[in-house]
Length: 104
Image 1: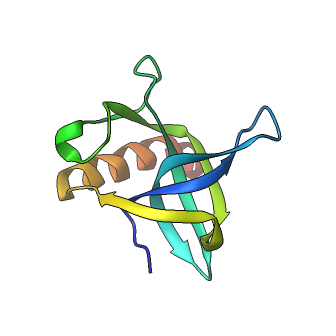
Image 2: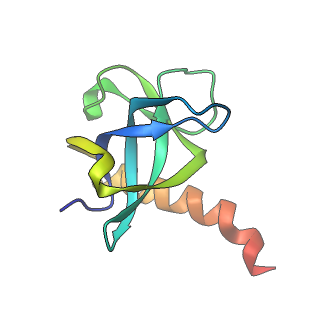
Image 3: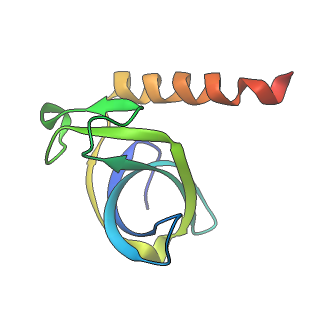
């Protein structure tokens, strides 16, 4: 099974079209066959958390914290690699900051 911090290749539907493509994503959590992920892009002009080749990415990329969605585990093609401990911590801290408004 998959776990938080795994970077996967999955069928992803774009928000502005009905088009579905295989794209990398990082797993935030998995429960009952549903996987909550954050999208990853190679467009380095996007905001988010950087992901380097040294960490396992095919090319320099960005984890997009504004692109979070739920997919079925059946949409996962394969696991690519896992984020290191420090990168997972940074991802958690950034997500917590963004969700902080729920606490006000």
